[in-house]
Length: 488
Image 1 (spheres, rainbow, N blue to C red):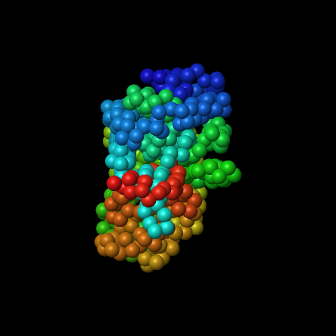
Image 2: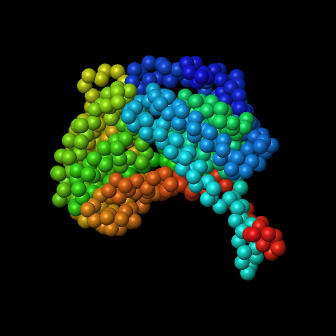
Image 3: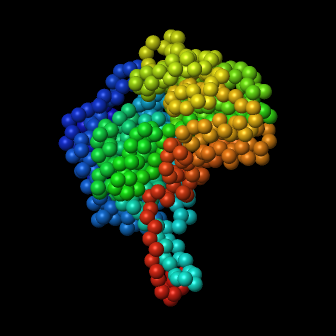
């Protein structure tokens, strides 16, 4: 496979081409700290070539002119290929960024398969074409593909987020350039190979590993019609401002500091077990993880004891060991960042577990799962996204107090409420300013839209609403006779 070892080619226009760039990026294993592969990092000239290929494929190629059913057939074949390569994908992402293999199997490999399946299921129900007949006129309302999409994905769930963007974009008839994170380009290269085998026409999907400068150049390219970006709030804020100068369409899925509210009547044991993955999934490197635990003062000590016991039961170590639940962080830089927040937390709050590096793990970018209690709502560790296995426990008096603390954040991505009274939990959840929120561990699922409020982003992904960001709406006034013809 082209992506193995030293990859000196870029997937542009349906071919693995020799790039303009001569700059390689070494991929360093989060477990061994050794170089495991080298990948070419694209130049601005390469970005121009990728955009030109996508532009030709949209303006002159067959993909936008195929029926939805025809596009669905190709994407269904891609899903079958993802299923065939599911084990390889899980292994590859674990190798790239250290996600425990037990989680990679259902999140990093199973997630993209389920996500693509969902979009194939809902695509026939999306209103790409509607007839609206009223006394004021007769309209043919079309939702047409935007054109060329730049899809910029992060390293923490690289293939899952790539599919989250590419599936609706391509099914709607767009063409795309996928820009993977520098830490995780290998799964994107594998996706290109599988898309080609599935029969995706040349130029419909292009893959461009690149640094931040070239990524920004790609997104601001005048021939790119839409940017879909997942990453940090700081990077998204800058990119959103730059795209705004050109009135360029953009979707931003950014950071989070999501609260889990444990009300005074909650089943503490069930809440804590739900937060095993809800707070510490992927070693804490998930933007929707619930990293602020808000608990009734009457149950605080009980929750702390139960949560500490649960975290102690999570094996830390080799991500390829199926028993491991906490693996290494993605890079030395990420570990340094997380350790900086842990040091700050020791100044701001009470450390109840962790706070250092695991004993016996002398290689790899590991940190201990760390829990702070008695955290002030305005503390740095309660306000800023850490992106590691670091949890802040805060307490509240009343439901109103819990909602106020939950909303005391620049973010609004996700959340959770735990209560023995479901109606009470839902009433609390409705008051939390967030894009999604779970009740007693019940997920809304991929058929429901995902996205953030405030600095957590703009727009929604997943669900049937996931198509909205990849279409333009056009209204055509038509004669009554033609409206009747189309309606029959």
